[in-house]
Length: 328
Image (tube, rainbow, N blue to C red):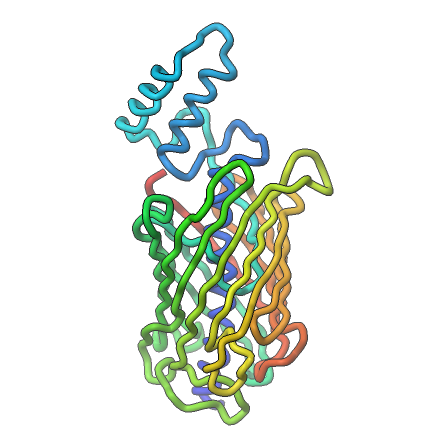
């Protein structure tokens, strides 16, 4: 079998896999911070949010003790100085991905890490199934200035360790309040590569991009609470809209043209979410599931290129992501 053809197809799939898992990490942590599901046991994703949550509990839920605004500020400052991240009685919950295989404006901050693995079936460019892995971590803080998300992607499990590429995204929270979150991301996938096949400039004979072609993009994402159609309370709705080239380009050959992409996703249950979106060249649909809400494991089934427009064609990708925050 043509080894270059295998790597080229897998690079395209890995781009979809990484973005879907990235959405799982970022949306889960962001929604945990908002505590929009009315659960008093969630852990906000920053020390400030944790402190504010405790102070609010003291003032609103305890009628026997009343404190002034100055005392509340002192309490928040004391908790922050003690660096309490996971107070007693609060627990972290994990959430399904609301993305559909495209980049998200949200990203990992300092302390956020994620490991993901995926399997995809054979397609028009590959006559056998293959797997890939992704390792992601966050630097800096998108709330204070900007966050930086970096990823290392193993492109093929069959040729384990031979070929890698690397992605980076700068992201900034533009709005955070009662109406939800709004974040802007600017990224470059495949800014560097390792391995002769991963860095090849040869275009596949069956069509599609060479494996060394980078993908630049800008994307704006919003996360807002909406009424739960299948139960009580509110659930998160995610909408992303962006533009990119490379793997997000409608140009199936060189990838030089910039094309519009976007997706919309909703959480239907505490443990189930779904999303549908346009990748710039094809229609994707994703179903996400969290087996245990308190355990960091998110499963995704992504139906890539449902419209069968790309050189690789329709593909089913099953992935598992494990997000962590080592500060909490």
